Every structure is written in structure tokens, then in C-alpha cells.
Length: 424
Image 1 (cartoon, rainbow, N blue to C red):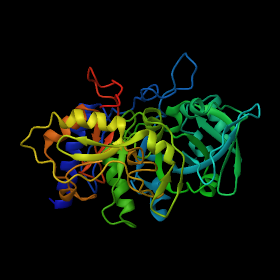
Image 2 (spheres, one colour; image 1 turned 120 degrees about the horizontal axis):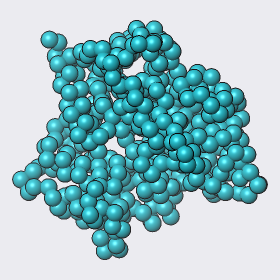
Image 3 (tube, rainbow, N blue to C red; image 1 turned 90 degrees about the horizontal axis):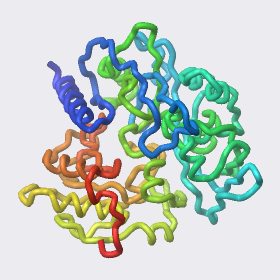
Image 4 (cartoon, rainbow, N blue to C red; image 1 turned 60 degrees about the vertical axis):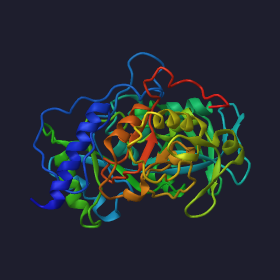
């Protein structure tokens, strides 16, 4: 068997076992892997992710659209992505963009100013750009589908979590850089219907706001066709190989993930903002943000952590890391520490639109042995301990990053939710 295929199968099996145990989505590897047709995988995930708004106001919770999710860490290459509809068994597709919009001002429906950060700072908002008619066809029938179909270039749909955070609803106005471009809030959707993105706009508007990179696609199969995620991965990889060598492709069958979005296993910006706070920032260069000093002073700290030395992280991350490192066996080599709080950013970075490092909510261990994109080398006991304390490991991703641990959720420990004291 071709070594590439062997590595792909091994990574797919490993990822399945990890995600099965952790209750996360199934991850499939770079390159080709074998897989048979399956009759299952057709049940949609119900409700929003824990703590996220479902926007229903009670009653029956919204459900994840019944679709296959396909995404690539750095975004899709332009040429082959248009050919996703040619994959066997696929009935229809829609490709969506994702990126960051810079909110400079918001006004509620009554004319009251809600957001007005001082220039040059702005609020980073995670945006997805869609083809309204095509994307709406994947939603359940009803008002949400009808509203999305009619979405215009000067309108925006907010997720329930985003609307709640801002205190905004239909009729509110959001102003973005560049150029003070204004959009009116047309509606508020449950988080699960919009992949957990904070805002939905048409693709032309997303491109105008700098969020025009095609990041993910939804696929609807022909009646009776229920291929496994591995089988769909094979087909997508074959397409993408025309433009990218050894493409990293992630595929989820219906029911395997709560949010249909790129980087669905990583914490969403909505989750990070809720847990660690929202900051304002601006692009200081082509590769870095400048985050508001006040937010940094209030949240980021340099603290001594057992086995790691002095590290600079969000204070809540430091708290969890001290707990985790106190449980790591002394005979385990942690390698070289690669940092925690990191303002490195560019629109197409493979860690996602707004990675956890911007909040000081991720950590890198054993950096020297774990080059991004290459097979990971890390003691399983480190992964187990970090997972127990609420971090997810990126070593089993299609684009493996073996040194990276991202905050994912509060750990199920008695003292996990304790608020760090000034001396912690």
C-alpha cells in the first residue's frame, strides 16, 4: 500500500478514536483513505453548543442543517472548489467564505450607540459570506430560510449569541471598516443555523469587508446516498490535488459535528469571547494585530507555571495550566515551550479566523519536535492530562499541529470553575 495512504488511514483511525472518546466530531486525515458506504450518519445534531444561544426563545430548539461539511484549514483554492458539485452522489453544494470584519460602530433600532471603539481600534467580528439562495436551501423550511433568501448586500444576520452580546436586534445598524460600510440587521438566527459565526452577509459584502476567503462548503447528497466522511474525503482530495499538493481536507457527515463551520473542532470566537472577554484591535502589520492595552493589562499575565517556567497567558489559562502541569508525571519530557498569548494574525492562517492564541487561551509544548503540517510526536500522557483540564490537541487534525493545545471547554473537575484569585 502507498505510504501516503497508510498514513492517512492511520490518522483517520486515530482521530476517530480520539473524537469518539471526547464526544467531538470525527476528523479525517490528509490525503486518501478507504471507506465504504454507510447507512447511518443522517441524524442532525440538535440545539446549540453548550452556552451558545439557540435563538428560539424556548420551545423546540433549532437543529444543525442536514448536510455534509467540507473545509480546508487555509481555505479552498479557487479553481477546484467550483467543481465540488461534480463529486459522485452529490446533489447540490454551497461554498461559503469566512473571515474577520472590523466593527467600528453599532447603533440599535432606537438610535442608541452601542459600540464605538476609539480609532484605530475596532471589534473583530467573525463573519461568514454566503450565497443566500443556495445556503438557504440547506436550512429547514420556515421564516429563517425565507429571510435568508431575501438577504441583500446592505444587510446582515446576527447569530443569537452575537445579538445577545451586543444587545442588538432587527433594525440595528453595524458599521465596518474599510470605508465605514453600513449594514442593517435583518434578523437573528440560532447559532446552529449559521455555524456559530457571529454574522452572516452575502458573499459580495464579505469580500468588501475582507472576509472573502472560501473556507467551507456544505454538500447535500442524492436521495438514498449516505457515503462515509472518509469516502467523501477521498473525492474532495482528488479534486483539490489539482491545485494543492497533499491537501488537508476535513469532512463531517451529518450528525458528526454541532456547528457546520470551518475549524469546527476549535473553540469559536463566540466561545472565546464569552469565556475570556472581547477585545478591540487593529491590524498592526500584515502578520499581527495590536490588541487594546487595557484589555491586555486586565487579562494577560506573566506567571510561573510548574514544568514550564514563566509564561504569558490569559489568567484563566494560567490557572488551568498550573493544574494540568501539576499532574504531569516528572518522567515526561515536555520539550521546549512555544508560548501562549500571541498576537500573530493573518486572514488565511491555518489555525482559523481568530485563533485562541489571540486570547492567550492556547499553549504550545514540545515545539522542536512538532512542526505544523507534519506527523506529531508527543507523549500520550500529556494529551490525556491536557484534555482532562479542558484543552483540545491539534495533533490529530488533517493539518496536524502536534505542539498546539487550545482551550475548548471548562474541565469536568470539582475546582475547574473556580475563579482564579489574585494569588493564583
